[in-house]
Image (cartoon, rainbow over all chains, first blue to last red; front, side):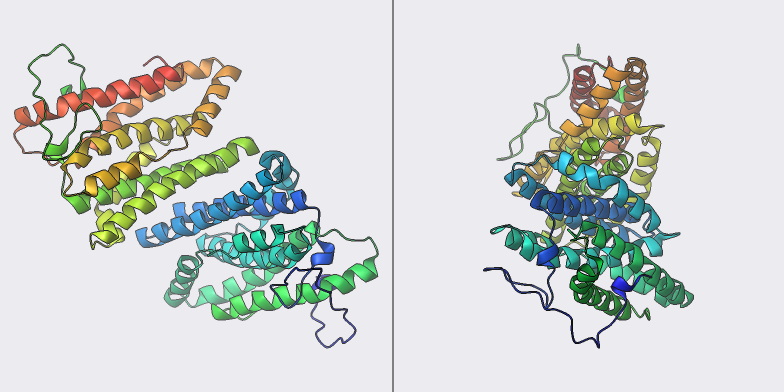
Length: 238
Length: 238
């Protein structure tokens, strides 16, 4: 793993990003200074939700029980609701959703394949963890969006993600076979690197590596901490 | 094909079903007299929408362009909205959605496999035609539901099905390769028998075959006519 997401909490010289204007930071750290232009931001976020929807609907199709199937359908629908909200925001800013999403499709498509996993539980865990991390990440970037758009985007991204059917299915899988916990713990650790690379690819970096790293680091440390809490809550030691 | 969906428009002795009480028939013919009990009706209709959602999300996952993918995601979401509306209706009538849907899952699952088709276009055509026919069918049955439920269910089923992305994709496929039209015409004809069997399985029949056929026939003739119109509109001679 590269150093940009290594944990270095003890450092005291990490610059604190200043809130810009009226914007409120939802998280302790925001990445507002590194926010890309509005339409690329929306395009990438919208395409990620489309892929999240696709992954959840695939998980739904192979669900072993009708209860899991119906629950995952709801989760998939909520990803689609976020996608629709972001698409509406693209239209509001006079963008064409397809044109705006298109540049991000190949890389995110490859990412989806990498994280799709070898079985149903890995697919579920991927959906849950990557959606959680990338949601947090796009919320960190939102204060850098112009005008009221940031607030509206945060409202979209903070909508219910319907994670209960996903975590319930994982938990009951682990109860039925305790070996699942160790393989999923490994899988969850593998995911984080690829997911942070997707996040990093969204940033409008200055090109000055040292300065960029200083800005990214506290935010990514927070993303990893939240990822670890999600793993812990599932009983997966990260 | 059995005689119950053969076209016999020339017969003049077909009994007209009387409207019951205040209920309004949406179609010229309704099947209100053969409506099953409320919860089984809702369970079967809700499970069909879940399968429709699954088929559309599968079609979305294998869409050749981002435009088709994003369009089919919307169509899938609209099937899910109908599913959610019907599930809410089950809860309103103190049913457990899973328990109420479960009895219909195996047969509808098999039906979905039969109609899933050999390629993307067959899958799309199946989604479009079977959803159209079964939607009409459940609307025909709705006048037989108690109280105001029938009206609410009709309102759910008459919501937009988002068919434009589906028919656009089929039409552009046919424009690109005219041979597709003849293979899809064949596929559309094959579908109708299996789809009408699903519909028939939902009916509360008396067991008196002759009398049942007399009641079913005009409604099924109408379903087939609407199916034929959908085929015609796509340039597929039925």
